[in-house]
Image 1 (cartoon, rainbow, N blue to C red):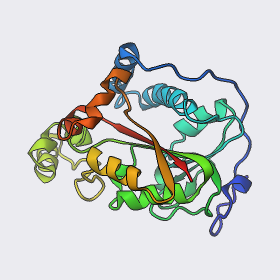
Image 2 (cartoon, rainbow, N blue to C red):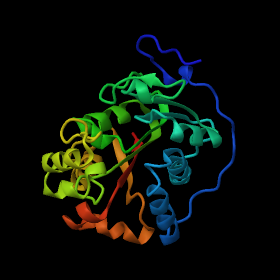
Image 3 (cartoon, one colour):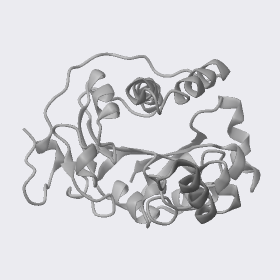
Image 4 (cartoon, rainbow, N blue to C red):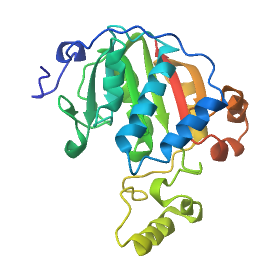
Length: 259
């Protein structure tokens, strides 16, 4: 069982082995996949389990394009409910979630901050995070922590929603284009309650440009790939176009390999 007392040290010693299932490497993602993901996304509020199960399966295929999961030790930063870790376990991974919100942690998860991950240096094979970076006040400190806990040769898979994407304001979108505070006030006036994701409290403006800049300059890791997470492979050139990429990317994936 996972020991949740004190600082945790080597994550390998804290994670139980999952089942081992083979899975083919991902082919280039096309338009059909994007449509499937966007259709699933529309059900997020009514059926979060269904949506995140679809997303987790797709993400596992993406991750397998960069590293095998069979017997890999995987840390999911901010993945409290455990959708991704359960999917990775289907492919042989041994995983654990770290989340700052005890109310969202699935059984076996660990309470901890993404800004100070409670694991030793170089203790996991894969450090993964999905749509968490935009919710921390110091995003690149979180990214550096993900690199720190990853073993040399291991993979960091970091996906986040950039602020100027159509969904950058989360539930306050698209009114975030008029300002985060204004969007929050409009949401509260309309729904009678403040949004879950409050601008500059639990939701911060992170850009595609900043992510690419950090990844290219990362001291202890090299950038392997950068891609728009939900969009077809032929959308990749958009990442080379300043300003346009901020609006047209939707969600950025950065894949790095630890030196």
